[in-house]
Amino acid sequence: MVVGADSSTDLDILRSSAQLYASYALERVYYSAFSPTGHPSAVLSTRPTPLIREHRLYQTDWLMRFYGFSLPEIEGALTGGMLDLSIDPKLAWALAHRGLFPVDINRASRELLLRVPGLGTKAVDRIIAARRHGNLRLAELARLAESLKRVRPFVLAPDWQPGAMLDDDRLRQRLVPPQQLSLPL
Image (cartoon, rainbow, N blue to C red; front, side):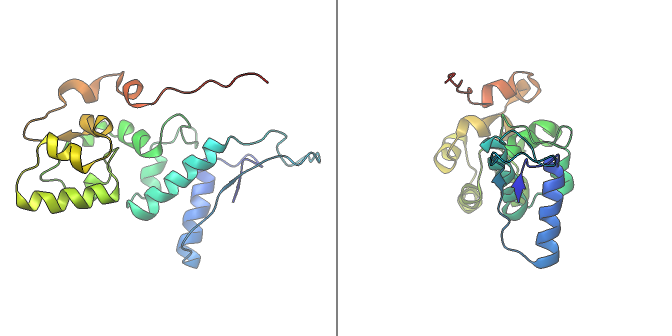
């Protein structure tokens, strides 16, 4: 799918992708950021689409295919039908659904652990395997997950409680990496 050539929102694109997956049993949909060719057209955009938009669509597609997110769940984290380009879709979803967190790493289902920002499928599988041998503490979680900084506000462990961290208005700022400014040419 070419992204940004017309006025389609990210939600429109994701709906089309979901329909393609359901109707044709596709294994993968590809996204490509639109880049004008220099040939003016009344129906095509004159501006190139930011590559980050393409990247966010791939991330969202991944959430739906491998993490069990449904399109209505994703839709709740969109603003005006568009993905937030400054943060990944999983973090945007978690911030929009703070009431579901924190989750207990020793009791939460696989499906709920997959919704924790910073936990991927491999980390969740390692957590589930490790907790069969006893309760996991924050130190063990740090060895199993790649980014403890992203995970901490959303989980509970015997030696960790996020407290008011989830309610803090600055949580997004603490979790979002700083944006690199572009220099004028």
